[in-house]
Length: 170
Image (cartoon, rainbow, N blue to C red; front, side, top):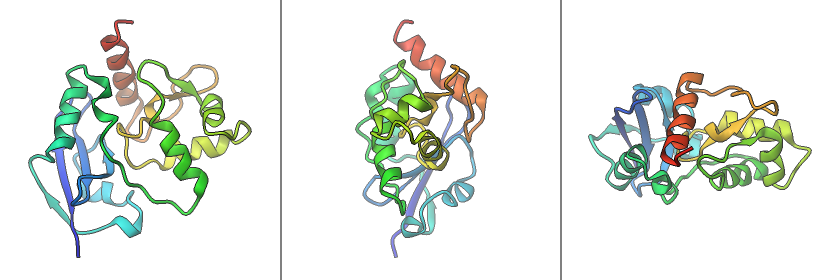
């Protein structure tokens, strides 16, 4: 049986725990110190016993670079999430194309995903996203420009959006 590698790192937004498979693909990430709770977000086909590591190599390096101002550093990190619906998988891939400093509304996100009337499905894709930061659901806002929700709390979402704006000089 394979195992899941877990690492928690300090960030200005709080502890970030990352779960990755043996191949280095991120299965889940969230602003929590609790790797076991995060494992509950991973699709059952990807779940495996958790082994804690101090460092996840390229994944950890990418997060450090992102925090240091290289906002594109996380873009190349492989992510593996499974779902039973084709739209959800497509929506997650689409979300990785939303650029830092250019948040979209749920309506805009649905349009980017090719289903402009599927606003609720786009919101569900954000809500079911297990790989926060790497699949940047924090870059999706309510239609009125409000923050909306975020699994890891609105202070974390606010910090991430402000960090990206600061790095882009806005």
